[in-house]
Length: 573
Image 1 (cartoon, rainbow, N blue to C red):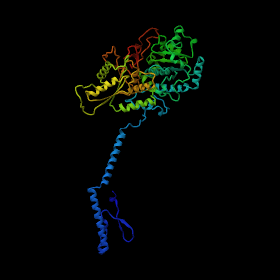
Image 2 (image 1 turned 30 degrees about the vertical axis):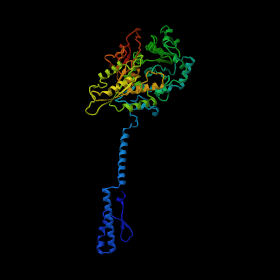
Image 3 (image 1 turned 90 degrees about the vertical axis):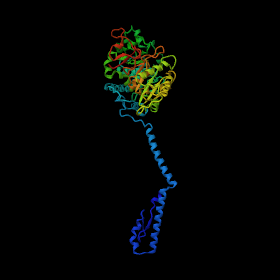
Image 4 (image 1 turned 180 degrees about the vertical axis):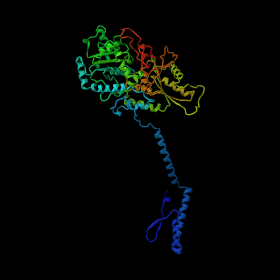
């Protein structure tokens, strides 16, 4: 307040200057000797005036302190309100999501290459921030192999001189005995989960055979996935000469490897049969001749073909481990056999920024702050959409028996736990909203027996699978990825959607058994022995003995699947 800082001035000798008067009237004390020297009436009057002014100031101060005026009070209130607002703003700012920081190990232990514009694909380096635990480490040999492949892709990829030369030979129908570059063309086919698994399979085959992988863009591949290789695209150029045949390729196509074998005395191929390209039909309906793709002698022939065009809806990697000529290379690449798709998936599949926005916004809004994150992936193979009571009963039985979700206490309306209550976020993915609604209502209407707070979420419920719709596939990809970010995962039998989530997340899920006759199975589920996907339609053929054999009993690291007794999957032994 200004009156406390006012400075009084008094004459100082005969110099005409002024000196500040003390707040405590020390000027009176200093003039004492001069006053004693003579009782000058004018000086006495001056002293009297000073005393009166001093008393006036003291009186004013006492009044202000006892009953401050309203303007002073308003200034104090304003100051306190401002201080409160500043503190509140600081607290609110600390509660807001902070800018995403790029992790130190953004290359996932050198699994990922350098040389990308980070803003063009935010998920490539930010995804590690959303995952818990210590990431698994890729083998040094796999890392070296990936760097070598990237160099090959840069040398032979789309629109390079060597690519243009090889395409020119393909157009002319001329077979080159010593092609500078060889290619595997992956045809976009089937649902999104299948496409992700088959693309990883095709890429591993390219690594094993020194081929360049080129990807048919289908309706949405560029919209869903960032480019995985530096500098040169993995997308097949739109003017590729065989593109117009892709939709028509099937098991009966003349260009298929199986039919090529039939025309050449069932496997007696000679040099005269060599041609610029061969179609590989590895879809679930392939026949015994098509399945010879998984035999060593047939791989010897295929190595000579510059262009292989592949259509498949199968994760066929387990059968590659049964080809003797690939055995040592695969062991060096993947000493830990159950990590094949985990590493290939983390290397290849990075959501585009549009999809990453769906993932990161949903995660931060609903899941990130929970103490435990549980994913439940529900796929029902039934003509009707559901929801079905037997499926809900199976989910509840599995999650509560396996301590994935806490049990309910229907006899109490409120539980008062000791200490801080644990929060559990449950992420449900399903084409139907019914399971989400039932589970949410149960945990709303009844407390848990141990006092946890359960929040149940479902990002979408599309009603039915819409493979050809771009936005449907964006949501599907986002939900697979969100499931991979959970701590515990429950998946449905036979579902490639769940396979992708468990592989990317490095999770061994609890697999719900497939219901029969609309009855909940007992037991309802079992824990997977590995995080690897299942090959649904493997060959059962011994290439050396040329007879049928149980291919799930040949080597310790290839076994039958938990959810499909005839399928094959990789395990650690």
